[in-house]
Image (tube, rainbow, N blue to C red; front, top):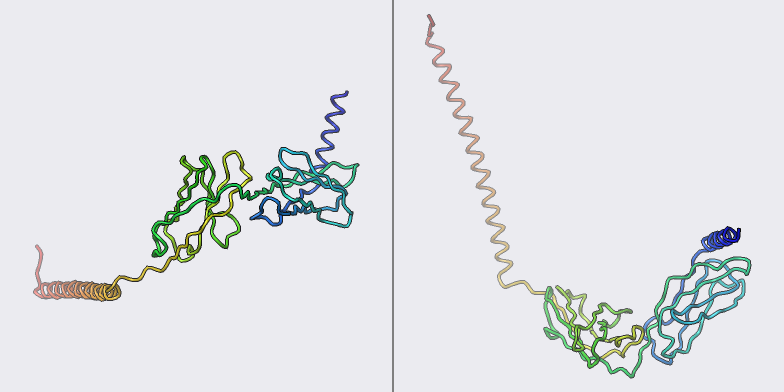
Length: 268
């Protein structure tokens, strides 16, 4: 009987939790947060709620009571190293109902100036033509770090790579176009500190220009067009001559047959 009661209570609780839409969580600002900066985590509620919880992975939850006429709960943090990590939120409409499912996670990555910026190099240097493969190399003295390649103007890193040893990562941009022009920088996360980052290092600037046509390419193209037209005309002429000879030969055979028929050949 006790087992049945527990099972029944669990089924009811799970059913109620499934009936509550899942909230969503956002981080402001979402990038470039340094230790000591203030950040806001906003839990967006699909239903008006009385209580909202903010969970940091591996830590105690933060609880917040809120007014019924608000559809967002805000949590303010003046960041310390221990605040770096992954967060989710959850809400409850009343004590008589179960809490909703937790939101999808957001990650709070904090920049720690105690980690020196990485160095960077570009090959080929600066000016390249469309279609060129470009290599960007980042390195530092911290072995085992995870490197990130950033492009100025992009809100998030465009590539990441675990260093293969020696504190170095090599990023390749294949077949670049003018859209790849810009300034690139590197950062890294020290080994075993997934949510702490070095500051961005110095930048390298890449300029991609459209590859000019080879000298005489237009003349060659026109020559090819003329050759194609001449070949087409020759093919049409040959075909027409062939049709003419077939028709002429057929007419000759018809005239010959008529001539033979006019001699009055008899069969015995």
